[in-house]
Image (cartoon, rainbow, N blue to C red; front, side, top):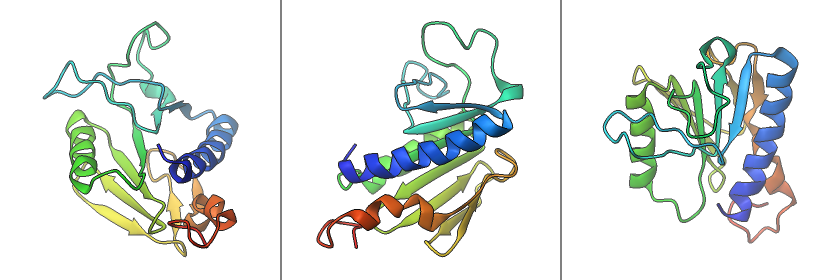
Length: 162
């Protein structure tokens, strides 16, 4: 993960973490957590940059050593400049096939956030828009601009910086 993506991901982790902790809706995980739940590649491990599992879906035995075998309710990928479009599309498709209801793809360079839903619908959010948790994280609301705030302190010649 690039420094730019890392800063954006850390900021999003803080904002989501505060919401999840205050509401008790479930558990938020970082990229250190592996998911082994892709039906077409059962041995493949996926590590979204951030992920969330609702409290009522936490599987028995979650807190044991090893990978989580239940798909998250939300998978979040924060793109680095070297992430290819085709690989990102493969990752999103894999999450959707595994049963992930919502996938967020955060693009710091363009300051856009792509919402992909299991039902095939989606959104492209820009800085002036508001991100919601929809049915996965009810009550979560965040201006997209706040996700990209770490970029505002970067030099103008930095991709995504001011």
